[in-house]
Length: 282
Image 1 (tube, helix red, strand yellow):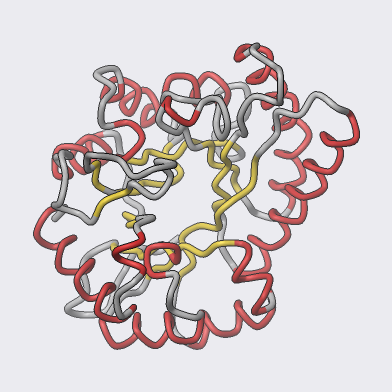
Image 2 (cartoon, rainbow, N blue to C red; image 1 turned 135 degrees about the vertical axis):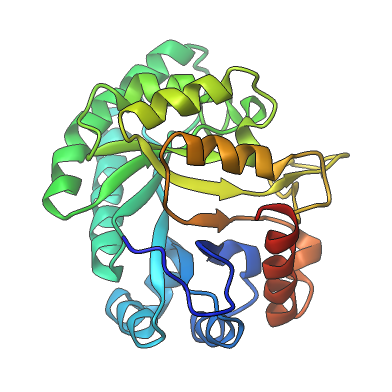
């Protein structure tokens, strides 16, 4: 996909919808136009609410590129009925991604089922599900992008915790069907991540690059602990250089879950995020 942006906009900057979720889809499209933002990463629930066809028309008319759809995954169920429902939901996510014009569906693997302590077995179930879903996605021009999450999420949200583990899964499939997401929030702590980024680059596996800062103390529940760029501990330029050296030339998507950011005026929060991107990523 093209990563060009209008004059004055940050190069290859994409705003993930969840960063400014207080904005409706039309308001997000309007704010992006006013601020010269050309890329957006969308989420399934608001897309479903607004309508897939209506969303596709909205972003097309606004001149926006949909850089990703979040999210598919949650593929670790043991129960056959639950597994079947998860596969059906992921096929729907693939259809939605194709419908809104993105070639990247972010995949969060899912955590351990209740009472289960077998991380290795859970990852194998993810691999089995990807084997079923990847051909379906490829037929629709969608690539599955496995996102490793920080190990604090391994039990309840994502049994894939490192880029190495994500690549071990992805490399079972053709690179144009299954790639990985490099998200600074989730990998910044891992001294093996730079080598894994290089490994991903060698076979063209980097499907998406996302940024958010790591700020402590983490809030209760930890999920909403992603910080505004520049507020925390991450050296974004170092990670930017690593993905660039690995051959990645796509968008950089800012994905922040933060209640303080959501409490503000959405256009103001987006404008600040653009400026923080210029200051801390470029």
